[in-house]
Image (spheres, rainbow, N blue to C red):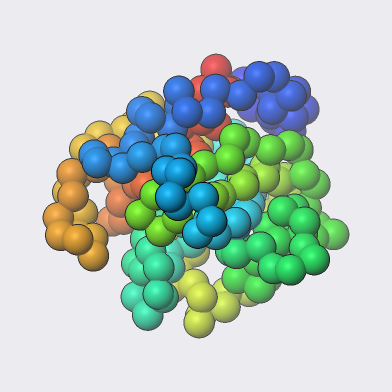
Length: 201
């Protein structure tokens, strides 16, 4: 797979596969479309798919959410959060990235967007942006919002999807996922990752 800032940016301008990619990693019993009765309950959020190159690898910055978080506690996620009043989707992704892992917006070049994604269990509508930093950044972790940082090697784990069973608030759930450093990447993060891999092909 060719990889570099220009290649990624160019591919993000093409028609995005969206649900076709998302369904590959969709957990059993979950929906991608918003039910009519849930339209007024949507929570809009943004995340940043933040990349940097080191030697021959491209790394994605992932976080593990602390167990005390109200929603998606203990899960592997992209930096991001709920869109506040008077913010654009991009404003939120950049603000949350700075708050959670200490990377300021002036360090980040936005290469494009991925498809929005609906998470039925928490009613979040997620807007993912793809960002690039020219070298490994210096991270400042907000321990209240981030249990730990994971630097995920994209090239090494392409097509490394498998199945696992995870504990959720409604019990054990079989999910498609990627296992990395003792963690399970599943749900929205895995679905966004699936689309990125498909676009880069």
